[in-house]
Length: 140
Ligand SMILES: [Zn+2]
Image (cartoon, rainbow, N blue to C red):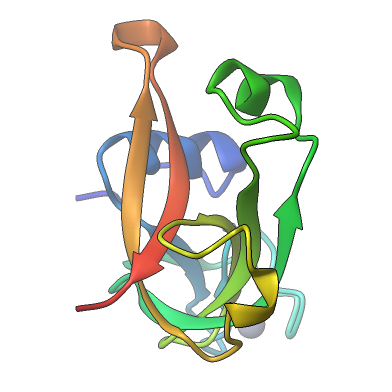
C-alpha cells in the first residue's frame, strides 16, 4: 500500500518512477489534489489519502515550446525541434501539467482542445538518478 507516503512532490515523483499517477484525496470532503497536497484547500482538513488516477483525460490548454529549459535541450529539443506542454484535465477532475506527445508541433493550430489523451511515463536515467516525466499521448 502507498498509504505511508507523505503528501509531497517528492512522493509524487517517486510514484511516477513506478509509473503511477497518484493524487491526494481529502478524506473529509473528497476534494482531489494533483500534485498532491497535505492540507485540503477546500475544507482545511489534513486527513488525506492516496488515490491512483486512471491516467485518462482531455487536453484543456497547450503551448508549443520553442526554447525549453536545459533538461529539454539536453534531450534534443531546440529551435528546430519544438515540443508541446499542456494541461490535461483527468477524468477524475483535476488538471495537471504534462508534456503532450504525438501532436504536430509544426502546426500548433491543428492541436485540438478536448483531444482525448492517456498517460505515459518518460523515464530518464537509472537508479538514484532516475527521473520520470509525466506525459500524455492521444488515445487509441
Ligand atoms: Zn477537504
